Image (cartoon, rainbow, N blue to C red; front, side):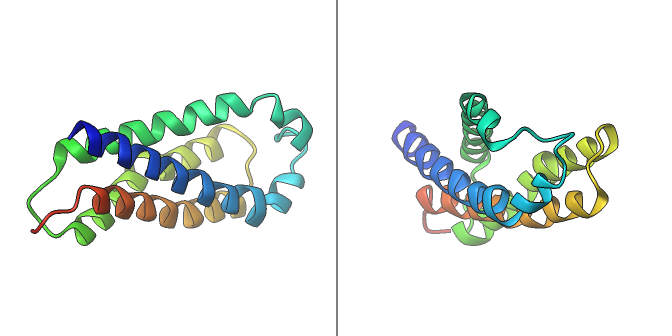
Length: 136
């Protein structure tokens, strides 16, 4: 199980970083650029990149750990999709709702973030389930 933990952590982290870059660095880039009073410039953000990596690593570590400890003897794909949806429900969706409530993030941006983060979490769930797959 330790080996599968590390393999799935690396795989989930890579998928998370790739899809998060597509989401935030490409698809939502213009939305963020329209909020210079809230968002750091690209140049300024580079100085904080390590903090972002640490945060993403912590999310992925917890995600894999919880999955591994709740693993059931069921088919891996539905279990992974279910876990990804649960992950979105206890992590990314509340995160965006709370930031919308306490900061001046526009409603349309918050909705885009939620809608785009759900597939990211679903993919993370599928990846961790695939690494831990077994006959269900």
